[in-house]
Structure formats: C-alpha cells, structure tokens
Image 1 (cartoon, helix red, strand yellow):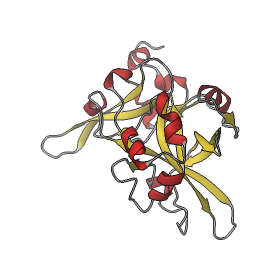
Image 2 (cartoon, helix red, strand yellow):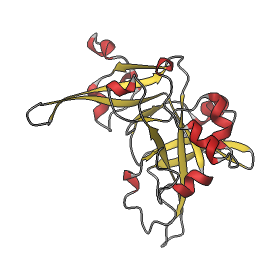
Image 3 (cartoon, one colour):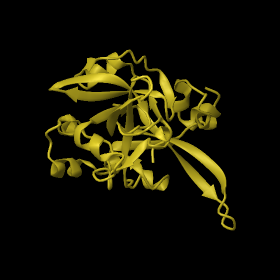
Length: 235
C-alpha cells in the first residue's frame, strides 16, 4: 500500500512538468501527505490537461456519506477494473498523482509473538530526481444534504519490484512519461490500460532511510526527505 508521500512542488511547477494548466491553488511544500489531505493531481477533460485539487481517499459517487473515504486511499491494480467502489472511476476518471517520493516502513517483528518491535521509514523516489507519476483514479461525490461537491482520489498499487519488496509487499503504480497520454485519455482501451499496471523498474528508483519524524503526520518540512545520515550528523 501507499499511505504517505511527499508533494513539495506547487501546482504551477507540476503544470510545467506535465504540460498542463494549473486549475487550483495547491501551494506545495508538503513532505508528509497523509490520508484525507488535499493533494494535487493531473486530469484531462476534452483533451485539456489540468492540475487540480482532490482529497486523498476516494468516496464513490454512490456513497451515502463520507464514512470510509479515508480507508479508500489505495486501489489494487488487480481488482480496480471490477471493484464496485473503483470500477466507474477507473473506466472514466483516471489521474496522475505526482510525488517526489513515497514512504514505506521496514518492520522487524518478534519471532515469538509476531509483534512489530522496530519500524524504520524509507523514502522511495526516482533516481533522476524527477517526480513520480503515480497512477490514480478520482471521483465526484455530492453531499445529499448540501449538494456540495467533493473531489476525491485514490492511488493504484501493484506488486513491488525487487527494491520495494525489501520493505513492503505493495507499491504504487508509477507511469513512464510515455504512458501519461494513454492513462489520462478516456478512450484508451482496457487492454492497453492493463498493460500499464506494472511495477516500475527497480533500477529507476532509489530507496534510503529517513528520520522517524515522518512517523508523525503533524511533522512537516524538507528535512523529512533528507537521508537519515544527514539527521545523524545534525544537519
């Protein structure tokens, strides 16, 4: 799964990278994005690509209330096409959720009890320093009492590559630049979409330990993405 990530670039900066128009004022400088936070995502309507704001945690259009939205932060690539909660969004409302890194935790367990005795956070990012283009889906939910619209999203996950497998048994689907158009285009065939739902090559990513300060969702700042050795040195 993916439960935390860094999105430090503003909507303007992301629009330049993804050849889009900024449609929402998303300031960036967020290094510890958590479920239900507002995130920037790239969407496409009638051929126009924009960077807009969504709440992380998909609320299906048919939901009676917001309860459970925080749990739907991830959608499994293997079942997203048929899942009642996700299939409509997968068919018509796909997006790219940019992230400079996502976090995973390496957990050590007591052999006798199975309880976690140590948990070390790691950042996983692209080796070339460019943002990760994470495959996502989005939905519009209308509050039945106020008719206010809420735009929400979820991250697609798949089996891990050899690098991420050392930390977790799932990872986000990361799209190559050559796949952006197909993922965002509403007319892309189901067969082509399925071909995109695969792990990113391990050699395209780096993983390194970061400060346990990232464990607390209230902590923020670029220091959270610094390698742990920098924290140890007091930098």
